Amino acid sequence: MTHDVKAAGPSASANARSDLAGAVECLAGVRVLVLGDIMLDRFVYGAVERISPEAPIPVLRIAREAAMLGGAGNVLRNLAALGARPHGIAVVGEDAAGAEIEALARDCLQPAGGGIDLIRMASRPTTIKDRFIAAGQQLLRVDRDPEGELDSDTETRVTDAALAALDGVSTVVLSDYGKGLLSARLIAAVVAAAAARGCPVVVDPKGRDFARYRGATWVTPNRRELQEASGLPAGDDAAAAAAARKVIAEAGIGAVLATRSEQGMTLVSGEGAHETVHHLKAEAREVYDVSGAGDTVVAAFAVALGAGLPAVVAAQLANVAAAIVVGKLGTAVARPREILHALHATELLAAEAKVSDLESLAEQVARWRQAGLSVGFTNGCFDLLHPGHVSLLEQARAACDRLVVGLNSDASVRRLKGETRPVQGEAARAAVLASLASVNRVVVFGEDTPLTLIEALKPDVLVKGADYSLDRVVGADIVQGYGGRVVLAELAPGHSTTATIARLAR
Image (cartoon, rainbow, N blue to C red; front, side):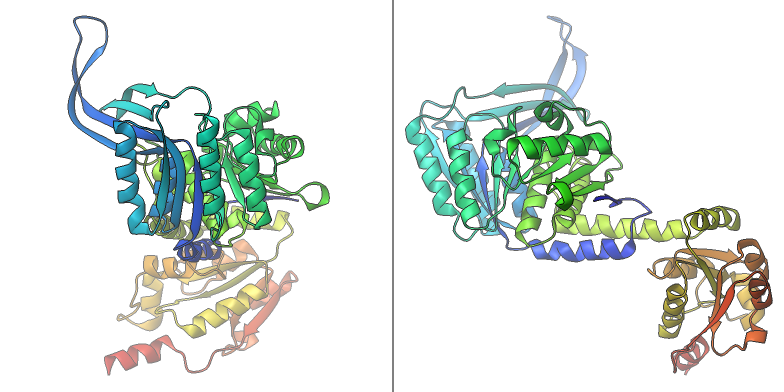
């Protein structure tokens, strides 16, 4: 079965986003083992003010330099930032860069309760990536990489360390940057041992041959990697799902989470009648630097799985986290407070999008009807929203598929309630109503009654409080005349805006 999960934008469910915000709290303290190619990321920042007289190239005047953990180290950084307890296993050279990685790892991981086993290999230099940046743009990247795989002694030491570290961890990440650490033998040993413990293995893959990760629970290729591994296009949702199916079947992988840049993400798990497919829309609005975004996805997804969250929820969190880091310069991390802020901001956008003018609302109502959905309508001032209001709206929503709320404008409230009302302006009242899951649309009207709205929208269900008799409900005769029905909702006793204001005045 295929599901399109709209995890971004105004169309997202406020309830779903709130649940996702609650899931962020589950990440704290989750133990994750990261095995992979670690490297030193260096950033050289400066300004370009002239072209070299020696060649047609810019001259970078250096202002500052920075260094941070890269590759599998960036996965560790992201896990620590998310509140997890990461443990890393990696190989470095007996050189200054290796010592710098050790110091950076200690400073990053120890405060999070994590650690790292760095195995030194004299004949193997530490991987370094130098990036030269001016005016927010990379001018040049210089890579210093080791060649070939580990020698047998080092491979044995890494394998032993990995197997020993498996006890007590909730998830394993294999971060493969193709630098030779993750040999087929090492992968097979770790995957088998993790499976025996019921521990999921998440692989950030490299190369075309995903069969080397056989038995892994998840692989997280980007769009290009998915296309190369499957030999199929992955340009749209259906194509990406088909490519993922082929990888699962041929490589013996449990499931695929494909990151597809501006097209979002695709999850495919299971086979045949048990297959589940989810497509997540992209979260990012402004992209400054995609460096390390894949590491963020792997880290957030892995720790969420380790926390026991469903895969689609884990992917939604990873989607939000990736959107945060691509909005920063350099290999960055996403922190829980940033994820929560992004989720809350999206909820506000979703609520704002529910407030509509009559013309746009009429078009939306027509689309709902074409989909076979019933439309309900209720109205009121909704000044100082209280439990009585909430109860009425929930009853109204239960009587239909989609609920429209007509909201009296400030001017009409003054005419009806007096010059001291409303306490809150129409924009604030509309925003509060729109934030409720029971409300699908809010429309402000300036007349004393909603008769014009009812005539224009022709709701299938008209809802009013039971303090009204049927003959006093505005528009009841119209709705009943075309076959609609009128519902008188039970009132929650003891709640009144007027009484609340009187108590405040006393």
